[in-house]
Length: 186
Image (cartoon, rainbow, N blue to C red):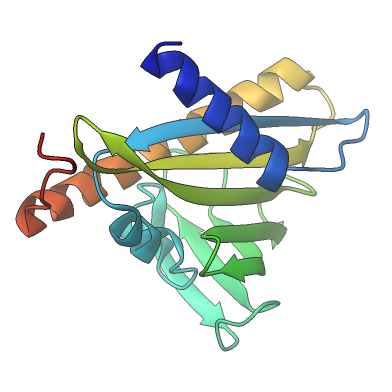
């Protein structure tokens, strides 16, 4: 088995374990994976900040918290121009610092993402002999009237890919400043 096959097996295992969504016929769902060349604790420090998604999400211009950062707290997110929305109200559903799991549900806003929920998990791995992180984000969302499941998934996946790329860029930039040591003498 080569390294790519091992990655695929680990990805599938994590998705089965942490990324289960109840999906109706009028919804679509998907899971995306990003390998980040930065240690898991650094990546998690960005992902877990429900109150500061703009730290790595390029489409978020501002976030106003309503609550104490506990499960059930809400955030009002302002979206940058260019997207078919200006605001999104999101509820923190799950925050597990031991397993590195963040769950979010969109509960309002001026957009078409109805019944949207996502789960983000981060997992330690070794990339090129250095500490790295596998980030998995999965979602489920209603398919808006007038759209197909494929169109809806394509749109949401494109947004998540941008967020994951930005997360990798920010994390890897921070890791370079930290100069993490190689693992196993590589």
